[in-house]
Image (cartoon, rainbow, N blue to C red; front, side, top):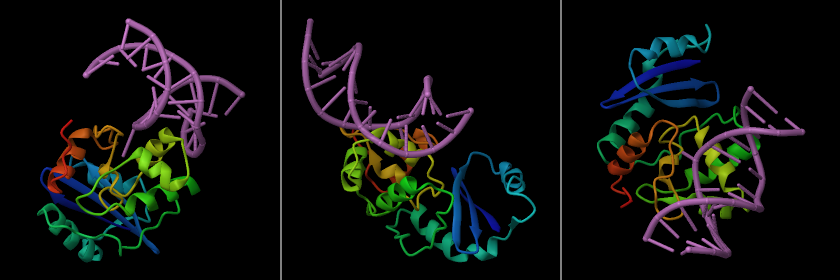
Length: 165
DNA sequence: TAAGGGTTGACAC
DNA sequence: GTGTCAACCCTTA
Protein backbone atom coordinates (compact mmCIF):
# COMPACT_ATOMS: atom_id res chain seq x y z
CA UNK A 1 0.00 0.00 0.00
CA UNK A 2 1.14 3.48 -0.78
CA UNK A 3 0.52 6.58 1.25
CA UNK A 4 1.00 10.30 0.83
CA UNK A 5 0.31 13.52 2.66
CA UNK A 6 -1.22 16.40 0.79
CA UNK A 7 -1.10 19.71 2.54
CA UNK A 8 -3.21 22.64 1.54
CA UNK A 9 -3.50 24.87 4.58
CA UNK A 10 -5.48 24.66 6.72
CA UNK A 11 -6.20 21.12 5.48
CA UNK A 12 -3.85 18.15 5.58
CA UNK A 13 -5.06 15.11 3.72
CA UNK A 14 -3.78 11.62 4.24
CA UNK A 15 -4.07 9.47 1.11
CA UNK A 16 -3.80 5.70 1.03
CA UNK A 17 -3.86 3.55 -2.09
CA UNK A 18 -3.96 -0.21 -2.57
CA UNK A 19 -3.89 -2.53 -5.59
CA UNK A 20 -7.42 -1.76 -6.70
CA UNK A 21 -7.66 1.93 -5.98
CA UNK A 22 -7.81 4.55 -3.27
CA UNK A 23 -8.48 3.10 0.15
CA UNK A 24 -8.62 6.18 2.28
CA UNK A 25 -8.67 9.96 2.18
CA UNK A 26 -8.56 11.30 5.68
CA UNK A 27 -8.26 14.69 7.29
CA UNK A 28 -5.22 15.02 9.52
CA UNK A 29 -5.19 17.78 12.06
CA UNK A 30 -1.43 17.79 12.35
CA UNK A 31 1.09 16.94 9.70
CA UNK A 32 3.05 15.28 12.47
CA UNK A 33 0.39 12.60 12.67
CA UNK A 34 1.30 11.41 9.20
CA UNK A 35 4.08 8.95 10.00
CA UNK A 36 2.19 7.59 12.98
CA UNK A 37 -0.79 7.06 10.75
CA UNK A 38 1.19 5.22 8.08
CA UNK A 39 2.65 2.98 10.76
CA UNK A 40 -0.81 2.07 11.94
CA UNK A 41 -1.33 0.25 8.64
CA UNK A 42 1.65 -1.99 9.26
CA UNK A 43 4.82 -2.57 7.27
CA UNK A 44 2.93 -2.88 3.96
CA UNK A 45 2.24 0.84 3.85
CA UNK A 46 4.99 3.14 2.69
CA UNK A 47 5.17 6.81 1.89
CA UNK A 48 5.07 7.26 -1.84
CA UNK A 49 3.83 10.70 -2.89
CA UNK A 50 4.84 10.13 -6.52
CA UNK A 51 2.08 7.54 -6.93
CA UNK A 52 -0.55 10.16 -6.21
CA UNK A 53 0.28 12.66 -8.94
CA UNK A 54 -3.20 12.46 -10.43
CA UNK A 55 -5.05 12.74 -7.12
CA UNK A 56 -2.90 15.58 -5.85
CA UNK A 57 -3.45 17.50 -9.06
CA UNK A 58 -7.21 17.17 -8.59
CA UNK A 59 -7.11 18.20 -4.95
CA UNK A 60 -4.95 21.18 -5.82
CA UNK A 61 -7.57 22.42 -8.26
CA UNK A 62 -10.34 21.64 -5.80
CA UNK A 63 -8.75 23.71 -3.06
CA UNK A 64 -8.31 26.55 -5.52
CA UNK A 65 -12.09 26.62 -5.74
CA UNK A 66 -12.36 24.96 -9.12
CA UNK A 67 -15.20 22.51 -9.75
CA UNK A 68 -13.45 19.17 -9.79
CA UNK A 69 -15.06 15.88 -10.67
CA UNK A 70 -13.56 12.99 -8.70
CA UNK A 71 -15.91 10.44 -10.21
CA UNK A 72 -13.38 8.70 -12.41
CA UNK A 73 -10.99 7.92 -9.56
CA UNK A 74 -11.28 4.28 -8.63
CA UNK A 75 -12.03 3.61 -4.99
CA UNK A 76 -11.48 0.47 -2.99
CA UNK A 77 -14.69 0.22 -0.99
CA UNK A 78 -13.97 -3.23 0.37
CA UNK A 79 -13.81 -2.02 3.94
CA UNK A 80 -17.40 -0.84 4.04
CA UNK A 81 -20.53 -2.87 4.63
CA UNK A 82 -23.04 -3.36 1.83
CA UNK A 83 -25.18 -0.60 3.23
CA UNK A 84 -22.29 1.81 3.65
CA UNK A 85 -21.12 1.22 0.09
CA UNK A 86 -24.62 1.98 -1.17
CA UNK A 87 -24.70 5.21 0.82
CA UNK A 88 -21.23 6.28 -0.33
CA UNK A 89 -22.10 5.49 -3.96
CA UNK A 90 -25.25 7.55 -3.72
CA UNK A 91 -23.37 10.41 -2.04
CA UNK A 92 -20.81 10.47 -4.86
CA UNK A 93 -23.61 11.34 -7.27
CA UNK A 94 -24.13 14.74 -5.62
CA UNK A 95 -22.48 17.15 -8.07
CA UNK A 96 -20.04 19.92 -7.17
CA UNK A 97 -21.75 22.97 -5.77
CA UNK A 98 -24.97 21.11 -4.94
CA UNK A 99 -26.18 19.83 -1.62
CA UNK A 100 -28.53 17.06 -0.59
CA UNK A 101 -30.12 15.96 2.65
CA UNK A 102 -30.14 12.77 4.68
CA UNK A 103 -33.77 12.41 3.68
CA UNK A 104 -33.01 12.73 -0.04
CA UNK A 105 -30.31 10.09 0.26
CA UNK A 106 -32.64 7.83 2.19
CA UNK A 107 -35.29 8.30 -0.46
CA UNK A 108 -33.05 7.30 -3.34
CA UNK A 109 -31.88 4.30 -1.35
CA UNK A 110 -35.46 3.31 -0.54
CA UNK A 111 -34.87 3.74 3.19
CA UNK A 112 -36.34 5.58 6.12
CA UNK A 113 -33.48 4.94 8.48
CA UNK A 114 -32.16 8.45 8.30
CA UNK A 115 -29.86 7.94 11.21
CA UNK A 116 -28.15 4.97 9.63
CA UNK A 117 -27.40 7.17 6.62
CA UNK A 118 -25.68 9.64 8.91
CA UNK A 119 -23.89 6.81 10.59
CA UNK A 120 -22.64 5.45 7.25
CA UNK A 121 -21.48 8.92 6.20
CA UNK A 122 -19.65 9.25 9.48
CA UNK A 123 -17.67 6.18 8.52
CA UNK A 124 -16.87 7.60 5.11
CA UNK A 125 -13.13 7.01 4.54
CA UNK A 126 -13.04 9.13 1.38
CA UNK A 127 -13.17 12.72 2.47
CA UNK A 128 -14.09 15.13 -0.36
CA UNK A 129 -14.16 12.33 -2.99
CA UNK A 130 -17.31 11.01 -1.36
CA UNK A 131 -18.75 14.45 -0.67
CA UNK A 132 -20.44 13.78 2.65
CA UNK A 133 -20.00 17.49 3.41
CA UNK A 134 -22.68 18.16 0.78
CA UNK A 135 -25.25 16.30 2.84
CA UNK A 136 -27.21 18.66 5.08
CA UNK A 137 -30.13 18.32 7.44
CA UNK A 138 -33.74 18.50 6.22
CA UNK A 139 -33.98 22.19 7.15
CA UNK A 140 -30.66 23.11 5.56
CA UNK A 141 -28.74 22.88 8.81
CA UNK A 142 -25.20 21.58 8.75
CA UNK A 143 -25.92 18.27 10.43
CA UNK A 144 -22.64 16.80 11.52
CA UNK A 145 -19.25 15.95 10.16
CA UNK A 146 -16.82 13.32 11.36
CA UNK A 147 -13.75 15.44 10.65
CA UNK A 148 -15.26 18.48 12.38
CA UNK A 149 -18.01 20.89 11.45
CA UNK A 150 -15.54 23.69 10.79
CA UNK A 151 -14.08 21.59 7.99
CA UNK A 152 -17.52 20.91 6.58
CA UNK A 153 -18.16 24.62 6.50
CA UNK A 154 -14.79 25.24 4.92
CA UNK A 155 -15.42 22.72 2.15
CA UNK A 156 -18.90 24.10 1.49
CA UNK A 157 -17.34 27.54 1.41
CA UNK A 158 -14.93 26.39 -1.29
CA UNK A 159 -17.91 25.27 -3.31
CA UNK A 160 -19.84 28.40 -2.35
CA UNK A 161 -22.72 26.39 -0.95
CA UNK A 162 -22.61 27.37 2.72
CA UNK A 163 -26.14 27.16 4.10
CA UNK A 164 -27.62 30.16 5.91
CA UNK A 165 -28.14 28.27 9.11
C1' DT B 1 -28.70 -8.07 22.32
C1' DA B 2 -28.74 -3.40 23.65
C1' DA B 3 -27.23 1.10 22.98
C1' DG B 4 -26.35 4.84 20.28
C1' DG B 5 -25.87 7.72 16.11
C1' DG B 6 -23.75 13.34 11.30
C1' DT B 7 -32.17 12.53 11.38
C1' DT B 8 -36.91 13.27 10.68
C1' DG B 9 -41.70 14.45 11.30
C1' DA B 10 -45.63 15.00 14.30
C1' DC B 11 -47.59 17.13 18.01
C1' DA B 12 -48.08 20.28 21.78
C1' DC B 13 -47.40 24.77 23.67
C1' DG C 1 -41.43 29.38 16.23
C1' DT C 2 -39.52 26.13 19.54
C1' DG C 3 -39.21 22.02 22.33
C1' DT C 4 -40.02 17.21 23.01
C1' DC C 5 -40.50 12.60 21.64
C1' DA C 6 -41.13 8.42 19.13
C1' DA C 7 -39.78 6.06 15.04
C1' DC C 8 -36.51 5.06 11.58
C1' DC C 9 -32.50 1.13 10.84
C1' DC C 10 -27.61 0.06 10.79
C1' DT C 11 -23.20 -0.69 13.33
C1' DT C 12 -20.57 -1.63 17.32
C1' DA C 13 -19.44 -3.43 21.68
